[in-house]
Image 1 (tube, rainbow, N blue to C red):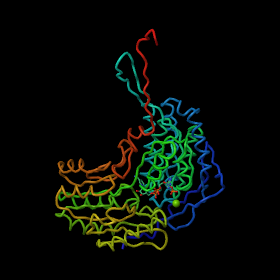
Image 2: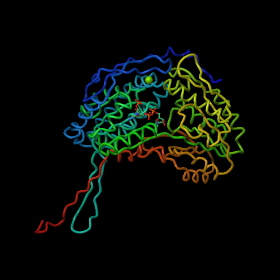
Image 3: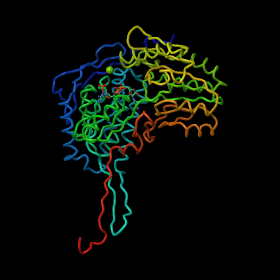
Image 4: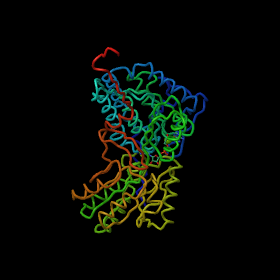
Length: 501
Ligand code: NAP
Ligand code: MG
């Protein structure tokens, strides 16, 4: 049985006041056109936190109109990169003044650990904004070698009106992964946050306005994917959709883009990332890394190390220590600083994870620890480890998005590489070894967008992040992400003015 905290130190926090529940369109908080609302839920209890304005087609139309106007005639795309960067820096400073409140909003909305929000999530959003603020005045074209008596240069221009559609597992980080490079590029935008976690996005919209980002540049339309999200991805006046979420919805977005104005699309989809631990690894360190890789953020993380491959020489010792370490992982109220794992984001996700666990048992995997809900209320699940998992089992192929580790034993490097690649996903992978040759060889052989050697979840705004295979295409982070929000234009002029020109 996992260690379930009784939440005794809960007195040390206050639940944040919910200040923003409407839509943010053209610099104003407004009710939805229909007047409808939806509930956002606290996963610690299943209780309603707030009723949010529910955006639909009409609201998306208004937001796109505002973003179009701000792009076609407004200051944002026309001001210098330096000036845009200055306003983004101001935006980042304002976030810094509200770290605690913003972290608390994500904790109550998504069941995320408050401490992690304060020291990791929100500071990393500030870092992202400042990184791209610094890039806003460094957008360069090239001089072109044109044959004949011509000269040419290329210009990089903002792509236009962007729709950002985000998931619920990292509400703040997802917002800034998308919004920061798009702002730096000079785009205007509409964000459709996940229905489960709309609270922090609205707070950010408010701070953007306070920072002086002009009306219409950053709009937020809360609502459901099948209505507001679909309206955005099929809109004729949206030039690009930047999406993070599931492969199923990624397909729908590509279809909508294809059937409307052929807007460009970038997709960050899920993963089933392998963590490969070699015989020469320090077993205690490897166990800690494996535990972090799958139980951090309750497994609701697209790069979770959900398939753990351990070489046969250390397998038995690893299994014993991994089980003990999962049992000592503290599950409980995410506002309690002692807690390491909060509740799954909602009932649907909670039940989905439990169904996968039942499936794993039926498929013949050995349940070593966990496997059950815990706590008296809310959506808590015990850290769970399966051994004897085979590649063709559903729990080894599907992204569970929960605290479920699949353990597998391997013999040779070749076998590890082949089995690690044996999935339709390719988002990330981890390697634990002291042997540089193994690390290099395996890094180059795994078809995934990020490889962590002797570490996991090491992110930085400067490291491009995205998927191979069905984990999607296009990169967030790094200067690569800027390219998604830029067009390239060639300008060619004659060098000599010929008499007939
Ligand atoms: P999801 O169902 O794909 O939803 C993602 C976003 O798309 C939400 O805002 C959703 O709105 C919206 N959406 C749903 N249907 C839509 C439609 N027809 N048209 C346009 N937008 C639509 O994913 P999720 O359940 O939020 O998140 C879990 C999944 O996301 C997991 O599979 C995970 O792998 C993936 N994920 C990937 C990454 C990554 O970086 N690669 C990061 C996080 C999560 P609603 O909320 O209203 O449904
Ligand atoms: Mg919620």
